[in-house]
Image 1 (cartoon, helix red, strand yellow):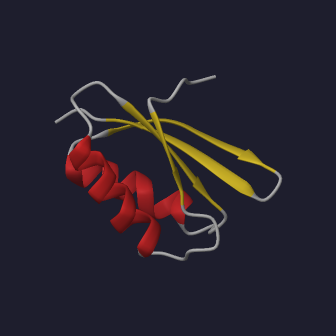
Image 2 (cartoon, rainbow, N blue to C red):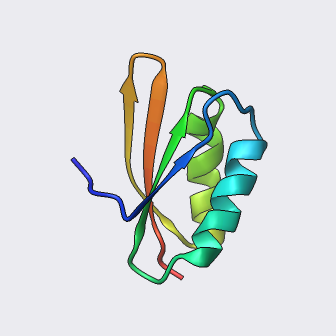
Length: 77
């Protein structure tokens, strides 16, 4: 299990809002820090990995627990 430096709750929000909020939060992190993103929007399973690839950040882990999707992103740039 991945340990996060910060957590971002986007439960109840639908794409693209969780990705936009993730992008804003990642700008506040320093290189190497990990952000946990909580979402219940199934679209995030496709959208956030694409954002990571395009932004140069690393998707470390994606976990689904019941209706909650937890994504762990490491700031790489």
